[in-house]
Amino acid sequence: MGGVINEPGHVLLTPGPLTTSDRVRAAATRDFGSWDQDFNDVTAEVRAAIVRAAGGMLGRELTCVPMQGSGTFSVEAMVRTFVPQSGGLLVASNGAYGERMARIAQVAGLRVRVIATPWDQPIDPGQIARELREHPGITHVGLIHCETSTGLLNPLPDIADAVHACGARLLLDAMSTFGALDTLPDHPGVEAAVAASGKCLEGLPGVGFAIARRESLAAADGRCSSLSLDLADQHAYMERTGQWRYTPPTHVVAALREAMLAFEEEGGRAVRLVRYQENSRALADGAASLGLAPYLPDALQAPIIHTFYAPASPRWDFSAFYQEVKARGFILYPGKLTAEDTFRVGCIGQVTPQTMAQACGAIEDALVEIGVRRRGAVAGPTTLAPSRLSIRDRKIPR
Ligand SMILES: *Cc1c(COP(=O)(O)O)cnc(C)c1O
Image (cartoon, rainbow, N blue to C red; front, side):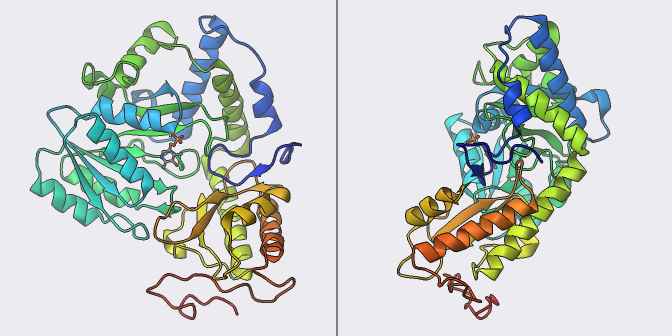
């Protein structure tokens, strides 16, 4: 795999922006005129490739609507475009992105209810069904497929079934899964899913998109309380003219076309998923051998990003650790949990199991450097296990 380390850059073990290939970055060096037919062709190719990546059985019924901005802009566009003022959104939340979606609905002035599930537990489809039966005015359910704030994978098929059985529609934040995991675009309970260029598709950050049925977009015409974030209007205009309504991020879209070519050459979603699963396994094994305790049990862990407890040492200092790991070529992520001291390591992007093993080596050296671990220790440092489980229960090698 070429171009994994690009001096003076680092390997990003962060789930967006992430480590990209030289060919994807090189594709961003060409200037395109936003009105030019060459760029209209780029847009059309990207949209078609994203629909193909979505898979599903809908064929021409399914469409891709690109939206300028980071991923959050597309989440906000989806919520504002599809949830009618007369309806309501039930957000099933078990992490920071679920909380953000609820906030988006609140700011939009929509009726919103939240199922607040602990961050280390999956969303319960039965609880969604009960909420929907008790509150028949709710038209939509918001779900985060993989909660990137922890790495937890929510049970999408069961949740989509439950939402459909209750006559509601699912709005899916598939930001950190689209391109690797099945996002069920053709499930009758799924109204739309959103994702972005700079996650599992391994493009540059800066553009998002929604996948939805043409009929859903047509039905949402005139519903959106925002001009620039109106997916129905963006879709109608793009279908009519081949162009974006407002200035497109031309370089990012050109790089995304290259990323989609690379995606299809690699073998598409199933092959990418296998690579990420292998990365995830290499990371989990490497961390376990260092005695780092994972926040989530294996069964809830998505092969996207892992959260680890900080080592239980008075010498632990995340920013010193971060700098030592960075000096060895890798960029990690701070934890997003408020109550517990954690850090995160992503396993998506142009990285392989070898990269993950090297990262674990860098993590080991950094732990030694900051005085949390003895060099060559067979066991790792003890880690801050969650209060309800003792270290012994978590089977940390000692
Ligand atoms: C990355 C991400 C987003 C969007 O975040 P931005 O910083 O706006 O790109 C939304 N939801 C999830 C689950 C994500 O991983």
